[in-house]
Length: 552
Image (cartoon, rainbow, N blue to C red):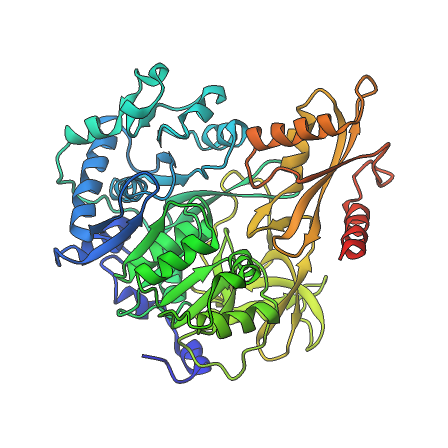
């Protein structure tokens, strides 16, 4: 099943090669639920999802079962007047019900909007307000976060009987589902109509909206088939949470698009739960963030010399892997691991391809352009840089038939220059069409695989009455890649103290999210600024790097 030559496939690729595998097409449109569920439901025994629960027993769910449940949810939406183009949000962990909400929303032609379960009220409020979300599905563990959400849309609560009595007036998920028919004709949307409403962090202002159009299915297919190397016989697990792009794109839509079973593990990620999952389901194809591999390597002592797994291949995305981790995965997990690069805006665009033989795979390199996409490195004059030079990674849109990003949903920023989409990431060109990540041209922080905009953290800190100013940066950290550190100037009437630092951390955790709170807070008299008053985060970054180097 391996294509002999990457360049041969890349040069001959056309979107029609993937359209031929699908029900819909770029001209007439798609129904995404039809593409990722109905196509495989004729086999009544074909498993779509294996679920490993926390308080519930493990369960398996067929495409046929999910098709009927999705139809019920689509009818639930229709009864509420929700349809094509409307945003439907879900604030739930990795459960079968989350999958039903995704599929049912897409079946109705509506737009699915993920909400990460670690989000606080402020992050939720901004996203549902901005998207004019029509309905929000949640569970007893997360519903209290909505108490402080101004303008919260109508809520449907799963397992309402287990929630606090004050939520008794909310609609109950299973009660409403039981009233619906399990037949619903899929609503076709145009190739350029959105089916996912994402948000991505930036360095200035709030998170930016990314509406993913249906044509992205072709790019998702190509990535899953040739970079992930997903084969019909594979048992595939993507560890990423579907509250984020990599998890939603490639743990939900991608594997189901190819008819493969996907896996949800509701338990917290630990080496023990990971190894249990690998063994129980005999996972052959694994995808995760570098943080996951680093954590496993840091707890190498859990494995014995005799431990073996069924893994054939592994993939990594979010930040570059270092040689030590790559060597450890090969030695201890028994398979090669490949680096991949992408963004919420674009999906994956540069990869080391498991099922396309490349002339060379460089350790730590993001690899070569995905077929259907042409990535380049540009200097400030928008000219392609030479071998060994650095430049900003960009997509040549005129020569990228699978490029699908239409621009930020509400015009928050213009990332286009002429025929190029600029990623904001700086890379080194190897002169043969491959690139290695070299850094960001802005201040985005990548911590434990999550991308965090410092302005979000700074704005949340400023909500606290004791904070006059704050500057937020990423401080190097061996396990997480970076931790969030905040330099804080306090108001005159407040005292800088350990107690205040703890209070500020809790404030950000509750208002923003558990992955975006500053693990370190340093109180300072003033922040370094430009003459125009802009915080010079690079000075703070250098200071934090020196601290990390001293402690290493």
